Image 1: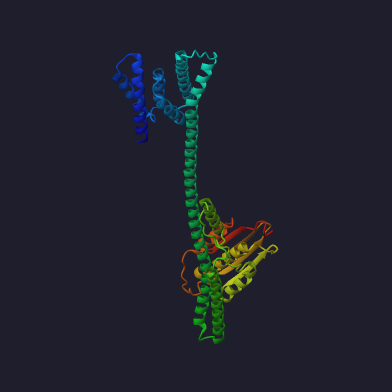
Image 2: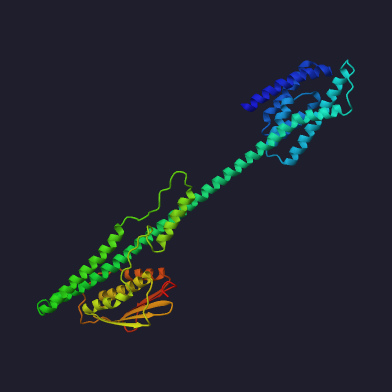
Length: 424
C-alpha cells in the first residue's frame, strides 16, 4: 500500500510536469500527461527492480520530470542488495544528469532576467553542484545506512537462531547424559543392594540349613548357629538401613532453578555438570554412600564363611596401605560376591582368597575347588547378576576383571584395580 501511494503521488507529479514539458516541446498536452503517468507509475516496482527506476529517472531528467521518483529510486537502490559498484555507477549517472539539467535551467533563468545580472563564471556550476548534492546525497547516504542496518539485524537474527539451536542441542545432550547417569546410578544402587543382601542372606540360609540338620543331634551347635544367623541378620539390616538412609537424605545443595533472564547455556552447563558428577559414580547432589567395608574387613568376611562351614584360606602379599574408599570398597565387594557364589554353586568347596598389594594397583583372586559331594545343597537362588556387577565395578575404576572355570573343576575370579595417585 505504501509503494502504491508513492507511485500514485509520483504519477500525478510526473503528469503535471509532463504537461509543462509538452507545452515547451510543442506537443499535445494530453500526450505529455500520459507520458508522465506512465513514467511516475514505474515507482510501483522500486523494491523488485530499483535499477530500472533509477534508469528511468535519469532518462526523463532532461524533461524536468520525476523529482520524487529520482529521490525514492536512489534511496531504494542504496538500501537494496544490489552490488555497490552498480549503486555507485547509477548514483553517478543520476548526479550528472541532475547537475546538467540544473546548470542549463539556471543559465536559462539568468539569461531571461531583464535586470542584466551577470554572475561569475563559477557561479552556475557551483550552485548547480550544491543543489545536485543536496538532492541526491541524502537519499543515497540514508539508503546505505538503512541497508547496512538491515543486514546487521538479519545477521544478528541468524546468529541468535543459530545460538538457540546450539543451546537446544546442548540441552538435549545434557538431558541424554543425565538420563544415562540416572541409569548408571540405578545400576550402582542395585549392585550395592545385591552385594549386601545376597551375601548376608546366603550365609543365613547356609546356617539355617546347618541348624536344621543338627538341631536334634547337637543342641549346643544349633544354639551357636542360631546366634550366627541372628548376628548376620542384624548386620544385613544395619547395612540396609545405612544405604536406605542415604537414599532418603535430602540434597544438601541441589542445582538451583533457573531464574528469569538466565540464559539456557547456564542451565545446559549445570545439567551437564550434574550428569558428569553422577556418571563418575558420585551422587549428583554430593551425598556419598559412606565408605562402607574395605580391605581391612576381608578377614572378618572370610571368617563368616568359615563359620558357615566353608574352608576359606586368606593369603595376603605385599604391604597393606591406605586406599581410596572406592578402591577398597570395590575390592571388598568382589571378594564378597565371589564367596557368595561359592556358597550358592559349590557348597563345601575349599576356597583360596589371594590379595596382592602392588605399587600402582591392588589385585585379588578368589579360587574354589570342586563342590563337596557330601555337603547338601541348600538350594540358594541365583539371579545371574553377580559376575556382571563385579565386572561393572572393576571396569568403572579402570581395572581388569576375569572369571571362568579352572582345570580342576572349580571356578576362579580375578580382578586388578589401579590405585592412582590418591592411594600411593
